[in-house]
Length: 141
Image (cartoon, rainbow, N blue to C red; front, side, top):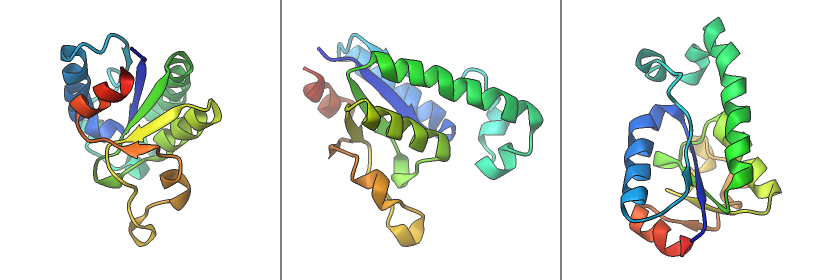
């Protein structure tokens, strides 16, 4: 079975955790996931532009992104948890990194239309839209 790295915004921390738990329960052996443990819940409720006003946040985030690049390096497949088509700047960097590594990149939902903040350049990097742990597991076997 292939290993998978999960990429996604901190705003979906709980949903990503649930998705990962379901993958593991289905028998996916290696799931690399984002480390959101360092983020305080009240900070996650804020928009990124407001989080960036916090000096401590600005200090922590680059290390977290760099740490996640190491997880991407170790994985066979990338899965982007982009609920409602949302991808933040950090996840966009991670998707670009995964693409540069020639990884298959699955996404939870299609990219938002450009007039709603979507990026056509991200959308073309997605191999397939998969929105259940069961469907992702089938692609990993």
